Amino acid sequence: MPAHTKIEEQSISYEDRLFIKKVKDDTHQREDNYYGISLPFKEDEPKIPNNKQAALTRLSKLKKSLVNDEQHRNDYLSFMTNIINRGYAERVP
Image (tube, rainbow, N blue to C red; front, top):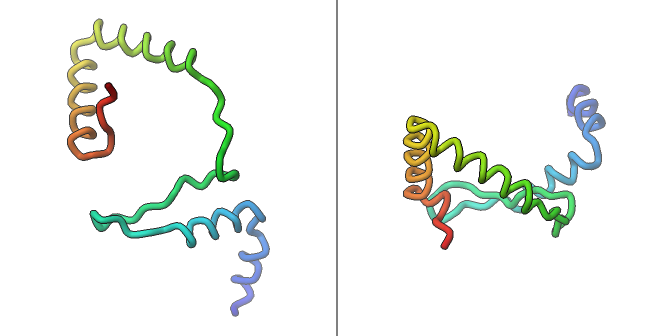
């Protein structure tokens, strides 16, 4: 093994090693021939804070922007239609 490889391996943190292991263990080929991997959280079940109020504030600002700016509204609708049609997102009832 070349000397520089040993130095590079020594400089990798424990967290980086865990991340690399998760990537190697979880990378898989999907039915559409793309590759996928789970989100590499430090914990298997991360504790996600309740950010409902922040989300509602952002939604309110987005609504105002879409109502007041026709170009922004058209661009937004085009973008959202595209990602829904490609299967990257779905409509929420």
